[in-house]
Length: 373
Image (cartoon, rainbow, N blue to C red; front, side):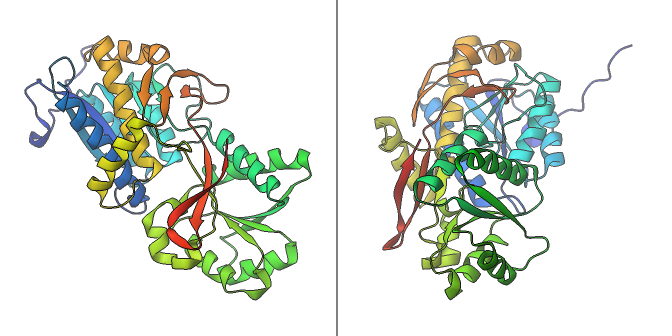
């Protein structure tokens, strides 16, 4: 039986075949975390420009074909199918873990190389695959470092304000499993049942010394912070956000001084590499603000894919995916190599640098490094 031909791509997507195309999955509209998506895209676009300025992929320009996932797994899976039909050599990007998992499943089924930039959920695929690799650390790696930071600063009774999500549930489990053998406890506060004001009463009753925001941004996370900051009973409680919300300018704009001193995870070295410093300057100009770690993840994604495509050809997807174990690229945050890591199902950079940082209460536009791992 013959297979019917795929429909032709839209006119706006046609090329004469002279470019090497990479599909980019990015959350650019709500309910996606649009600011994170904007930083991710800035990094991807800057790296593409630099690759092309240096001669492209064996003389052929690199082209980014961007699709907005809007934090919707179904939309992301459909975008992967469309991009595969358009003939992209590989996929890049995505920030939201549940969305990236849907994209990874389709990429694996279609035989399309996918280098995931930012999503951290451990089990990015149900079963091991050769088609998917990842730059961001597995959630269990980063969140254990965060748990060690909590213990090291005297916090062993932790409350988590959480919402239903595979990502938040995984984070809660990681924290509980890591803290329990060390005498720590985790108390869950269901944000589907509690108002931000009611969270304050629960915190007082729980005797927790730290509250972690495992809930959506900007809401209900911003309202929780405001309520806790204004409750005199909770003046000594630590508010934390391991998922990284305080990294972005929107957090500071919405919360002002209330958004300072909220420790979060980010994936940067303590001191920038020469490449990282140069890229930071270029990203700052492109974004008109300080780049987040997500922007560096975007840049590094293209750096890795460009090297794979130069070394192993841009027309054979299987050769591209097969190159993951042999890739060695100097990224903005150190040398990038991939290996098999238990529990992830994908080729993994093990590991990017990890920091626990916060916004300095004296200068909320500046960051303090509190812990490294």
